[in-house]
Each structure stands twice: as structure tokens, then as C-alpha cells.
Image (cartoon, rainbow, N blue to C red; front, side, top):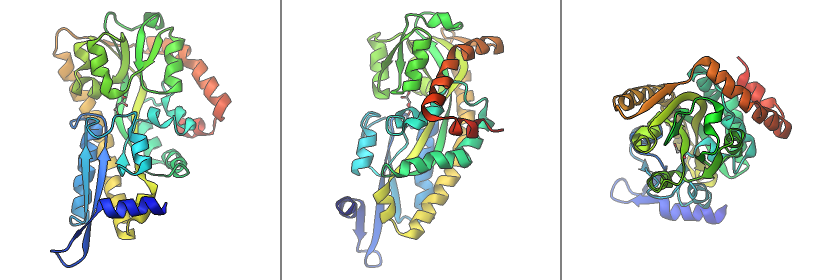
Length: 327
Ligand code: LMR
């Protein structure tokens, strides 16, 4: 703790002698892996602007997008080491640290955006964020990207059988791995910054992601069969290194909390709109085949995925699940 704090004091607090003697500027590095023009990229920038405004420039948040500082496989360690102060990894990537977070990867957990918003900004969200505390992380908020869709190189993915034998890119997540195995596909973990290159090299046949990520990174150019399944939700845990957080003056903590709350509210609206608009843009491309899963087809997928719920409950109990499902 002490050494870490020293590190931050030296590296991330710049003394500005010219203005009123010893006024320090606090610098927060915020690293993430997606494009700037995405729900996470835009929220990170909005948060940075709000913090700067609310603190009259005393705090500067520097956002590093596109994994330019750390890839998704590296950013958690970088945060824990204190090399960056903030990251916002997807839930799946938090499950390696906190296995209970697997609950958020269960398919068809959230029915719609209201479900998502209630969970993210209510008691469940608070419980989930509190779990980060014992890992040396200050959990600030849960942000959303959107519902995930399935896509493939060669054929439409409509019935569970359609996945059989496909090599499928996944994030590191036990639940998602089992999900693909239930479909008799072959899951392959690929970090986000390698997805495009792997597509160029035909290293996998299918993947799941949000329209925003598919659009901003151009994945549809390689995998033109997109199924609107909304089967999973891609959300983010916005986190700060805990000893850094604790080293901040109380008034600054207060401003950061206000900025994060404002940003979260905005993000939950904006992310929905952005995914809808970008779906329309993708649809204009005549070589892309978009298939919307019917309710009946969705039910078939749900039945296929039912064992994931049993396994989760067996391992972790049903408390979190019940909290999320409470209507
Ligand atoms: C992915 O790896 O597909 C996503 O988690 C990337 C992201 O952060 O949205």
C-alpha cells in the first residue's frame, strides 16, 4: 500500500508552481480496448470532460482507447500494479478475478434495457461492485454496451444445430465457453485487439458481439451472417485502483462520484441508441445478411442453454440470480 501510494504521488500528481503556489494536478490514466466512437469510448471521454469541469482542471483524466496502452489481457494487471488508474473491462473479463460475476454471462439473463438498467443502477449493481473491494479495486459503476448478436463467416446461425463444428471466438469466460460447447462449437479465446487479425487469417468461423463493436471494428466485412439474437449482454465494470482512490482528497472523490453517476445515466441511454443506429447502417450494406431470431427460435436456444443456469446455481447458489430476476 505505502509503496504504491508513493508511486502515485510521484507519477500522477504534478505540482503546478506557477498557479497559486503548490496546487497539484491529479492525472488519471483510463485505458480501454474499444474504439473511441463506441458506448465505452464515448462514456470514458464524457467522464473525463465532466471530471475536469467539476474539479476546475485539478483532475485530468487521460483516456487511452483501442488498447493503445494495454490489451484486454493486460489491463487488469496494469490496474492492480498501478500503472493505470482506471479501466472498464467487460464482465466476462472480470470473471477470472471474481467467479460469481459469471452470473452476468448467463444467456437471456436480461430481457430488455429496463432489466439492464435496474440491475446496473440498483442493489445488484452495488453488490457486484462491492465484491471488487477485496481485490484491491474500487468499483465505480457498471456501464453498458448492448446486447450481443451472433455472426458467422459462411452460414446463417438460426437453429442450435447451425453452430455445430464452428470455431467460435469468445472472451475468456467459463459460461460463454460452456455456451459454445452446448452448441457443439469449438470455443477459442481471442483477445479483442487480435480479433481483426484472426479474422484476416480465417482463424475462426463465428463470434458474438454487440453491433457497436461489430460496426466500429469492421468485423462484418469478414462475417456477413449476423443473427439478431440479443442472447447476452455486454457490460463493463468501471474500476479504479483502490489505493489510488483512497489517496484522493475527499472533495475530489465526491466530484468523481458525481461525474461517474452522470456518465452512467447518459451511457445507458446512449448505448441503446448507438447500437440501433449502427444496425441500420450495417443493414444498408447489401452483402450483409441480417436474420432476426423469432420468439420461438429464441425459446429453442433458451432450452439449449438451460444447463448453464443449473451449473451456475450449483456452484454459486441462486442469491444473485434471484436478485437480478426480481421484477
Ligand atoms: C470483447 O472482447 O469482445 C469486448 O469485451 C470488447 C469490449 O470491451 O467491448
